[in-house]
Length: 588
Image (tube, rainbow, N blue to C red; front, top):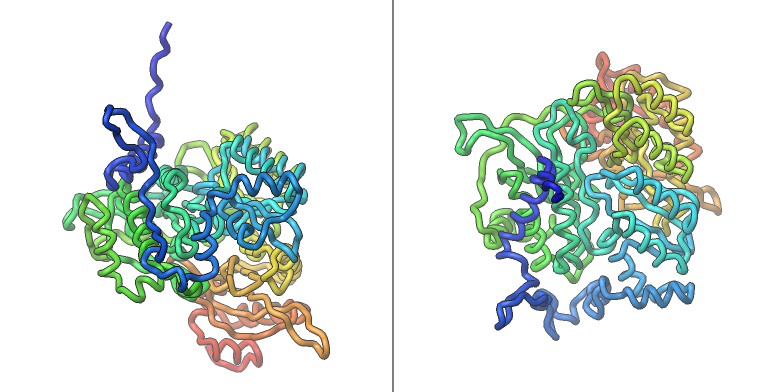
């Protein structure tokens, strides 16, 4: 008996609609062509390089990284990687850069081994995949995994002999690391509660996943002038920090009486790069959700063709638009699309709902009646294999086997029935985690630090734990505080958007140097958007704990009613804050 076809779910329909919409915009599937017999043959796209130039840049003017890519595409080193794995040896310097196209980073001298960075579109991961990552970490890595600020997972201390084993197993799990490093589009992020947020405007997970697979299947979207970040915001309660991305798609509602049909659209924000002290700003574009994959692909392609390939410090989208202006950039994007881009003032759209700081931690009702999501705090964003297996078991026993990673380096367990909430909370605590929101611990963000990164000046993960314990014992705060610790100016932990941001540095103490931090205050995202002010320079970590204790004490004494720490610091200049926190002498 012939089985009846199973209809596509709404999510699958949205996914396919977005994916094939992008294909249509570029005239179909570019690597298939018909020969004289009418059969389709596979042909590579025409090369965009010639013997003298790379996208118009003379070979002699290319940066070191661009020359490495010109000599051999990073996607084409598989045979070299296999040979190096067989010999248990590390790659040459040029090939070490190319390995990053496959998500493998040689992180010596901090660790003379590889770090694996996955791609987990939208931060959505299955329990079976989490178990597989636990096995990779235990069998071939250092026995731990880290959550990242792109809702992703990294595994460290992988020796050369196990690099290919790792990539093959990752593929068999239904995951990949392809394009997760070097000059590529990094993990696509989405609001972690999308699909079950009670107030969201749109489930954006299908679009994040569609764009992820579009990128993976288009060779020409690798090897950008520099890295590129894209994010989808559902308009719900929880933030995804979309305003820190090169492209941020924000779900919004347009009511009747405007120039377009009422409904839910995306507003497109461009050029977020907080390490360079800039948030993404509204481009004026309003697009239908199903157009987002085509628009993102067109925007990336314009950047590929015209971004700076001579100066790595200027090789981000921000600098191309600074040079051209937004109108020229959008006109070039329009040339790559088969539909007209719509402009509409932001004021014509409904305002975005406020986000809830630390709102992803704890037990929260979903829009599906009788179900909840539970957010747990992951100390220092680090997980042991047995903890990964334990989280997977909770998701399988009490949920649907689905988990969500957040850009705040935590994990959500969705689809938990009311009757099972107590059991899941108990299970989380048995694993060594907490699902109760703590004003300090819930907002600690830390990069890898010098324990695993050659660029970092301080041990951010260890320091974040020490700070969290110290300040939590000193204060019972009624307002959340985010503390971001980043080890170097690359700002992987985005210290400029923290209520308190800490940038690692070496501090001179006599004839020696110790680990310390430059201290910034007043950062925020979304409706709290602000770049933090630097107030204190070169504070040794031992001195940082009493300094922050004093800072918080002054804030509690001087704030207005229940004013948040972020609001308090943002309404003072850096000079005022230094005076206030140094001698407590300035009036509020």
